[in-house]
Length: 468
Ligand code: FAD
Image (cartoon, rainbow, N blue to C red; front, side):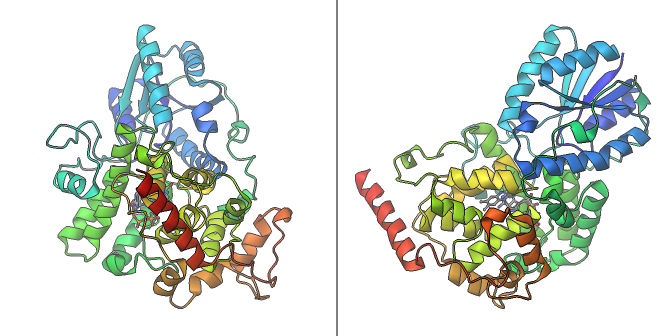
């Protein structure tokens, strides 16, 4: 009987445990992608990026002899219909630890098994399953450094070779990719983001090779500089499974073995991703609730005109505005810029971190529910192993330190400059007319002075401390 291979965030042929198992089983297969409530709940940019990942991946899968069918609808009902149409005896998938997916998948596994259908899930999204890594007391880790020490020596299976052939199951009728509902509703022109995105498994492998060919050596010293291409830029591929973390881990381990400076720092960053998933698995509310409940009484502001100015990159604080425009145009943002922009929103503008998290979720083509939630709670001070609240990033001195020539700010800000670079012009081309900001226009006035914003945040923090 055929196996339905349910595709999700695992759009690659190499190091793919489910596809390798399918190939060696010799059973006929049909690949399915279902746009259900979990997928249509993604933000606009990630949804578009997922559609592009599918556009690249599906023909490659078909070329191996695997028919592909796309459907829209509730996952369980859709799978049941497909099982009946294909005469399938099994549904296989790669695990996705997004809490929304975990809840859906465990219900589906139970329902399929109850109906006599084999339901099997495979690893591949992360290196170290959160249920296997435990502290001495048997609980989850809450602090990064001990987590790193616990996992760094654990074995990671060598990556599997790319699948080269699959046995074809029946061809089924579905919808076209364009009708899946992934790309069309992107509010800003997807065409602009498309110019900056790099899609697919081949692009991911090329990025991996390019990074270990050079930038890794200076990664430790250069990774924080905003205008430099000093990091791997693999996050958008990891988010959609166009590359596996094990492929990156082994490349890093080889570089470390060969004495590449920077390799250990890089592996540690990759383990921050693991830590985020570890936290998300054990604390599924990480993206919705203050991890430290004593933050619930903090007087964070909700939606406001200031928050809207932040989203539009019009706070009047140049490095923050540059970061927010980079996000809008490219669907990505430099890690240090993410920290600066998040700190400005939660501290200088005293705004609830969930408002920022939502906007990142809407705009990031590398959106990762765990890394995003951990990042926001870390910056806000409400999360596990977080930066203390009173440590407030000063955007101006951060810019001086990490964008000393101003190249990053010039790339994204066109105020007062009629000969704006293409990047800045892309921003003006992409934003809705109502945002009305044109190259050469005067810079927006600061929403609040840095000194005043800092003092206000510290006062709110002190009031909360004394009320405890
Ligand atoms: P590199 O520096 O080359 O690092 C290699 C890989 O390690 C990354 O691809 C990523 O998978 C992982 N990594 C690096 N830094 C972190 C980190 N701080 N936390 C978790 N994993 C990390 N990352 C996302 O992938 N998706 C998100 O939605 C996301 N949201 C964030 C929100 C905030 C507020 C902050 C502060 C950080 C967020 N990050 C997120 C983490 C980080 O900014 C990105 O992973 C990084 O910028 C990606 O660029 P890169 O691939 O060149 O990273």
